[in-house]
Amino acid sequence: MNDILKFQTNIPELVTFKFNDFREGTGQYGAWFKYVVQHKGVDKVIFAKEGLHRKLQSCTPLEGKELEITLAEVDGRKQWKLYFRGEEVVGGYQDTKSYSKPQEGAKMNATEGLDIPKMKAWATATNARLKRIEGVLFPETGELSRDGVHDTAEDLERISY
Image (cartoon, rainbow, N blue to C red; front, side, top):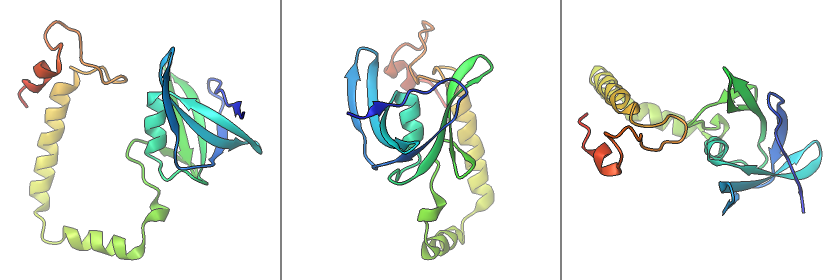
């Protein structure tokens, strides 16, 4: 069995992922996601909770990818920080190496003829709607607020935006 890599607060660890996939399960502390990595020349496993798992999935494909992972304490709160090639990974991150030149050209051609001011107005309105409902959700867990007003998914669906 591989050693388990446990992260210490504010100490970055450089790992290389052995595979694209992961194993998942549920234990005493909730859902877990198992990744196999190489750390300092030794095969190890990472048992990630939901937050780290989501960030790792935004980096797919993972096989052969080297990431610096830190359990950082910022303003008294712990959060995962991931870096790929010196740049911080944020949600929705894509490895630009996977894009080919024809795809880039196709993306540019797809934007021709679009009403950019109209799209910007739509984006602004959408962001405003999201901000209005943002207070109903806890930012880290995504669970519905238990404020006595918006307690169920049905309540959330009734919020006008």
